[in-house]
Image (cartoon, rainbow, N blue to C red):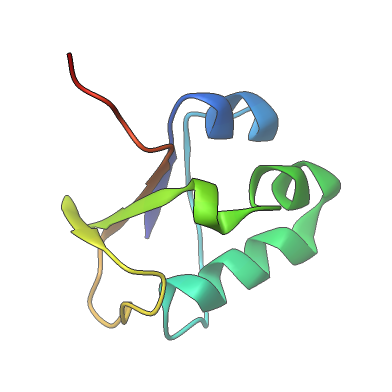
Length: 81
């Protein structure tokens, strides 16, 4: 699946996006797999309460299932003005 990173998440990981092969069943499981990869992922996902996630371009929770998902995006909360 395509995993996209925005704002400071992208800065900490050093990539705007990547293709990830995962066995995870949920977004939280995907995060756990990514964190286990390298310290830069651990730094980016150290506080998931400070992150939002979209699954196939729809806002979702970290317990959202990944079956059939093509894209997951991680980003900080946005504010409008």
